[in-house]
Image 1 (cartoon, rainbow, N blue to C red):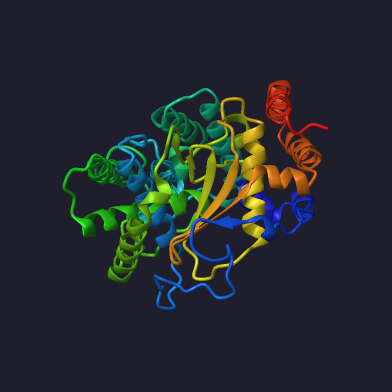
Image 2 (cartoon, rainbow, N blue to C red):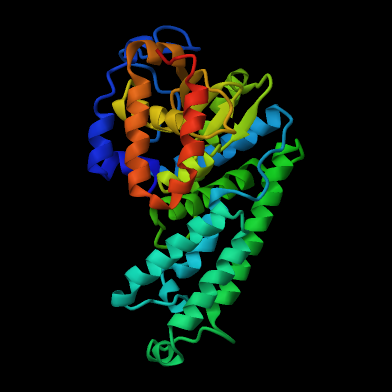
Length: 378
């Protein structure tokens, strides 16, 4: 369960975050006029179509664009999209609507047991900095030990030899590697076809969405529509006019995570850190102050306080790509208006109670918090 899911579905945390006051008055903007105008003009309309994958795809393009204009290749192949690709082989839907033929459909009474093993193995491998290949092999070993040949035969599937999923997974990795190679070329200012780049980002967005929410189009993760490509092209072309918003002075981190604190919430990664500003990217067709956005930003900020290696954050920002609007709030204003220290302590206690696996790291996590908030302690 990710930070976003916790905020939406965990009763304790949901109630806690409802106590965050409205902070609209403290937001500033790098655009003209007030931070949240009564009716901001939309620059890139979605034509009434609501495809959340475009937002995921835009994130992959924007991070590549920011690396490009700052001459810093930071992301290579260690992307959330790759975790989505690795996850596919355990799911009922694979590359197309007939993909059940290439999947090991675990019988219902064993699904929960497998799911628990799968999740615990992922956390353990992540904590030990193991590669995705090592994690993949561990899960395969579990499958061979747990599921007998008789079960597989009854399902009319073969797991080895000509078992189709092995071939399809390899084909998927080849496609993924080609996408990453083109994306890296774009970052390095090499010539890349715009339409091809948009298609690549849409596929990365598909894989990302699959990993985060188990969503997959009925025609598979490699399905891309022309309308989505056009929409994404329009978004990227308008964003390039505002490139000055994303120039760094000293620090750039794409998709920053929060180490042990990320595990506490079942996974958390922000969009971009530029210098001391944490920026959340939105591709929504409405623009205005939203409590959900503020809760998400404060959640990330608190996780950064419990992460010793995370750089200091002075501002929390939102960039909406359809409106090309950039708004931000100073951390000092939050502390002056709201007991964030007491709030953070309550939040972390709930998380540690939920995840006993990290009790051994409790002292390190809490010491990081004390060190990073010493200027705000009363």
